[in-house]
Image 1 (cartoon, rainbow over the protein chains, first blue to last red):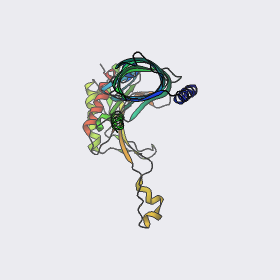
Image 2: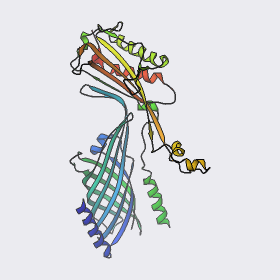
Image 3: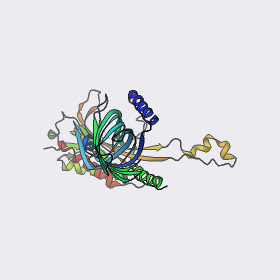
Image 4: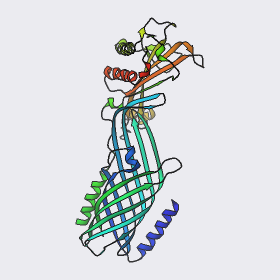
Length: 193
Length: 203
């Protein structure tokens, strides 16, 4: 984790000291699939991503991004049995995921109006999952080492703004206490450059 | 200016991702738990006894026992009786000769959330309150009260390792109490406890 932060700071300092262009992006993020979506089976319609990118070359960016996705599900009244114990009630399940990445992206057509791109990110992801049943809560949370591949497209709308559409796969590796967590997001937002 | 406005608008939209969900009604917090002695052969049992009152747990077993008022206790006993009879058991007077002794007990517990209760402020600092000066920042607080009903079944003819009578089944119902006593929630909980314990059926 410390290494990632140091590398990010070095890259950031190197890039910002040059004359590279930069951009800032805010995206609405829909979360679905993966292990997180097995725990909470409803699609997450509440999420956001923020990105800051530098462009040492027109077709390459280096950046940082962070975001979160919130999954929630109300499971109907049911019984759950383990051994000789049976517990009945309504379950309220929640999952929060906060990915933080150092990223790099490659743009296929930076001079065109439609500009597809692919990217990867390495960093960390905080995942908190909990189930409320009655007044009781079973929870699990941890910081994970994480990475993400991403593909998307930017649409040039004006000299200082693009629309962005992206599909990401956020994967958080298992820790000593918690299992691996992953989910996908579809992002849509604006890029100010 | 347009750029900043657009950023604020989009940021506001995505920042609406605050947490939602959870129980809206108190009965959504009701849970029922049951457990049993897997070595107990319930099918071979046929009789049970039920006390005439429900014990109210007050915290100290050395104190004289308290009981729920009949208006609360009687419907609980009636619902237990209904379910036991439906499973094929026959009620008999309380004695050690019955196969199963049913022992219901209930208690409530109140939890205060949010630090100390503002109402105690004058007790902490009478100087302020006595001088006519009003402390404006009373911390807010909330509280919740839960009610629990536990039904134990013991086999009076057998002892457990600790010398007590052998516990063969426990059903526990826990829920958030609202302002009024809702007997239907309690009855539903009792029914559910028996429903999810089909192994209790006797021949």
